[in-house]
Length: 78
Image 1 (cartoon, rainbow, N blue to C red):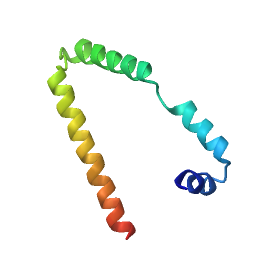
Image 2: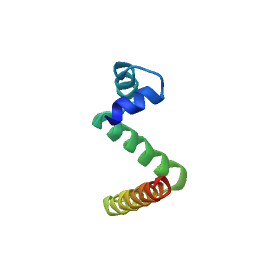
Image 3: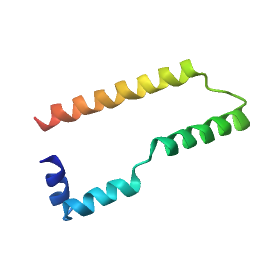
């Protein structure tokens, strides 16, 4: 139902919506490659290597921020 509503709001078919998503979504391999490039950039430009603990903490903070934003959005939609 949600996909149908999104497709209708964008004035496109469900097939076109799914094709758009597939074209822009990153695979796990692409995500790993992007993370490796980011790590290399931070090391080269700032001399900093992000540890696994730091990366995990950052992911958790981003997850919390995303959840807070969704909660706020639901609160304003009600």
